[in-house]
Every structure is written in C-alpha cells, then in structure tokens.
Image (tube, rainbow, N blue to C red; front, side):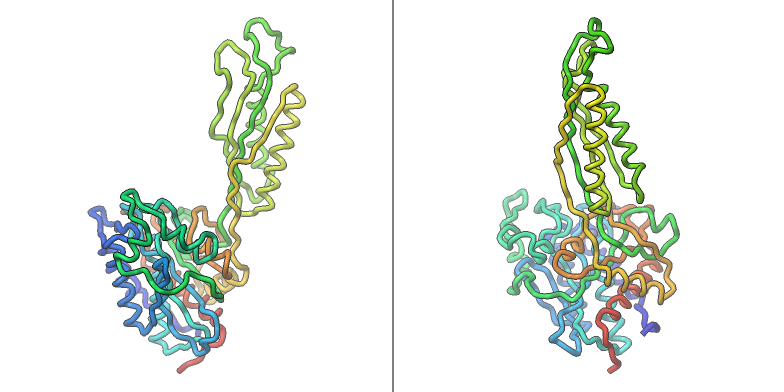
Amino acid sequence: MKESKVDGGRLWASLMDMGRVGATSGGGSGRLALTDLDREARDLFVDWCRGAGCAVRIDRMGNIFARRAGTDEARSPIMTGSHLDTQPLGGKFDGVYGVLAGLEVVRALNDANIETEAPIDVVVWTDEEGVRFQSSMIASGIFAGMYDLDHGLSSADSNGNTMGEELERIGYAGPEPVGGYPVEAFFEAHIEQGPLLESEGKSVGVVLGAQGQRCYRVTVEGEEGHAGTLPMDQRRDALLGAARMIDAVNRVAFSHQPRPVITVGAIQARPNSPNTISGRTEFTVDSRHPDSDLLAAIGDDLRRVCAEIADAAGLDVNIEQTTHRPTITFDPSCITAIREAADGLGISHRDLYSAAGHDACNISLCAPTGMIFVPCEKGLSHNEKENAKPEDLTAGADVLLHAILGRANKESRR
Ligand SMILES: [Zn+2]
C-alpha cells in the first residue's frame, strides 16, 4: 500500500475551513472548550465524518468517535485524533491538525478503496487545553481511567457552569460510557510546538515519549553569627554551603548522557542580612529527563553531592522531593510503526521527546500509543501566528496513514 497517499490540498483546505470557526483578527483561532464556537467546530467535523461514511458516537464527556468500519468488527479500534478546542488566542494547527489528519486518512482510504481489518476511530478529545475549566486533558484522562467521570462533569468555569451542563447545552453530552474498552492502538499527530524539527530540516518527529520531572527543596542548616567577629575557620555558613551545592548540582547534569536539564531557580538565605552569616538557606532544584531511571538516579546524585558538601563544612542538609511527574514512554511497536512508515515513504525524520503534555500521554496509560510531530514555524504555538508548511503537514498525515495501515494489519482491496 506504499502507493496510497493523503490529499495534502484537501487536508490544508479543511484546516483553513476549521480555522475560520472562531477566527481571530491576528490570523489564529479562539475556541474555548464547550462554547458555541466549540459546538460549531464539532458540528463541522461530524458533518465531514458522516460525509466520509463514518458512524459517529459521542461519550458522556463529549469525546467524539467517528468510525470507519473494519472488515472484522470484533477487532478493537485503531484510534487517531487530537483536540479542536484552542487557547483564547490560539493557532489553526495545535490539536486541529491531529483531528483533521485523522479525517484525511479516512478520506484517503475511501479514495483508494482500501479496507482495513480493524475499524478506525477518528477521535476529538474534549477540552485538551484546560483554559476554561482549569484542568487540561481531562476527558482523555477519564477515558484512560485517571479520573472518575463525576470529577470531569462537575468541573466548573469561572461563572460556575459545569462541564456537564455545558455539554448538555451544546448538544454533546453523549450516551456512551467513557472508555473502559480495549483500544488496539492510538496515534496522535501534532505540531511540534518547539524548534527542533524546523532547525534540522526534518519533516517528521518520531515521538518516543514525554519527559518526566522531579523537583526538590534543599534546606541547608548552619549557624548564624556576626560577620565581623566570627573567625573564618569557625563558621557554619549555610549560604556558602548552598552555593557549593548549587555548583555541584549543575555538574550532576553534565555527568549524565543523554543530558538532563537541571535548574536551581530560587534561593532564600536567612536571615538575609548583609552582616550576618546565614544560619539557614533553602534552594529549589528542577530536574527533567525522558528516562525515569535516570531521573531517579539524578535524585540520588543530588542527595550524595549535597551530603558530601554539608559534611565537609559542618552543615546539615535536608532534601525533600516536592514534585514528581512521571515520564511517559510510548509503545515500542507504535514508535516502530511510525518510523518504518516514514522510512518507507522516504520522509526525513528524527526521534524526539515531547516537552509538552498531550492527550496521547494520557491514552498511553490504557492503550499502545505513538505520536507523530511535524515542524511548525519558529516553534511558535499557543499563538495566533502559529504556522506550518503544507508539505510537512502532508508528510505527517502520510506517515499517520501508513502507521495506521500497518497496525490495522491485513488490509485488502474491495
Ligand atoms: Zn494540542
């Protein structure tokens, strides 16, 4: 099926048509979740899907599933999609591209008379952005079993309108249960929202996962003393100890490959007086890396180097972990499917990690998941000026088509 391709012109036209729903004066789109504009975007998508022969189901969180039937309806669906809601002054591509690339895959399969064994569901996840109801990716999270349904339906905007009420109002409070059934695979196409692909001239990013984060508060205890009277060799200077630790923590980052990012961004010395030796100094450490083992090892290193410095200086140190966002690792078979699809099509690609959260991160907790990134201009996103090249968007959709076809396994011509 290497010869089958998406229609890039049709994909672009659909993106521009969708972008007109809630168009902003700066050339972007503003469609907050479950507003009238969100309804208009959903209605347009549903019309297009029905036009492409899909059966449309809606669940209780308003997630939309447009199904292109497979030859074996006993098989679990292969899912693809993203979100149609945007930031208040958002772009035309963030989320929308993943939804309409999925629709374009369906249209291209129809054009080529290709049947798949597994059904294909093009999905719109409700409220990815989390602007209006203050909780991003909530509906995909409920689908994945991270939160219960009531938590989602009772989330309220600043006017006290709940998601449940707003879903009813716009006609998208569907009857279907949210999740709880097997999904054979989920593929999400998305603009990169960062500069790597564009700077390297690559058309597609094979997303390996999303980086995790561990943050710490380090408290160094010494003893306060007079800056003029206490001899240098008798001091227990917490601020000096903290300074040495900060340097050591920075060197921990350079001791690992591939290199993590580690930041000391805030420090507080007490009593913070120019003529008093600090008796207590606190600083923060923010560490991020896509490998959870390495992220844990960084925590161990941090404790070790700080303890060594404290011992040598007669100080006490306490390290408390304040944040732990787990690393997301996408499914190896989905990653391979995406990479092989790009190779088979002769499309340039590189592996990368997502620095941002996506619905795919949630769905990866309940189904084999992969993501395809395409470059966007200057890495700009959450911005009306967000832009992407038609040829890159087409390349990403072609990779999506072939990754899905490979996964749907046995396909046959009608
Ligand atoms: Zn997005």
